[in-house]
Image (cartoon, rainbow, N blue to C red; front, side, top):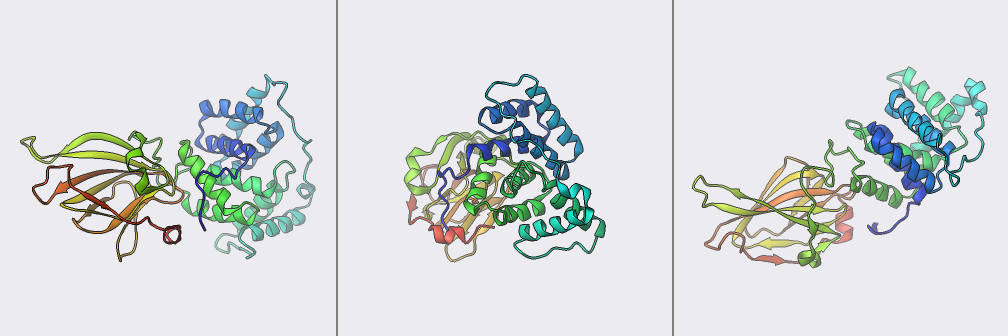
Length: 348
């Protein structure tokens, strides 16, 4: 399946809900206040935001949920004429029937898991809380549908560190609850591009220490997707200041990769600084790249590198001449693109 990186499959309403959810999870109240105002201006209702922030206590804790509700309360104190209260909140019937809440929650959780019942035998307490309370009591609210709830959940989990297993489960669950895979891919790209994602151990290519640079127009024909180039301070390998290597910081948007290519007369060295990427040599399996990884590519080896599907990626790149060619003047041989079919096999 090919993902169109420029397609806008999520609605403005969904993107506003995701933005507010991610900022709630981060505890970033400074950015949350204008985000709430923007959401209300774009048609998200006050009651929808109340329900989103209330739901998130189960994922981000009561303090951040209450803080976000406090921001919403403050903002609505100066309610604008175009802001909508939304449909009237109704107390869910299952709140007065524990058995009904458990039954409803079990049904919802089974759908979330792709039709397979899930029982957490290791800890019966948490198994009950998940079924009866989270997927029963909370999901029974009448303001958000199941698809919206999972967008809110994925956005919040993306903003938290150390929750990769839960994030992966809810990405899949978001599709089971009515979103398309393309929408969830787009959601992850949107969060990463706007500095709202803390997956990848906190690495975020557009919010990290390395500047994104300018569109890589001179080499665009050798890339699928958009890349950005920023020349940085050359690497000095010698105490005499004579062994200096030109260095470039290359940023890849999610899904972007360069064509297969060969460096003649030089080794290429990649130092991964942010996000998640891939490196592959011809005839070998692709290798996942993460911040701190270093790849020393032998001269004459056919290879490609780029971002993973759901993450921005940055690396520093330099060349070490193995001939008498002046540093930075070694020829590259650009070859065929990495096909969508081959690239999409790598997606996790």
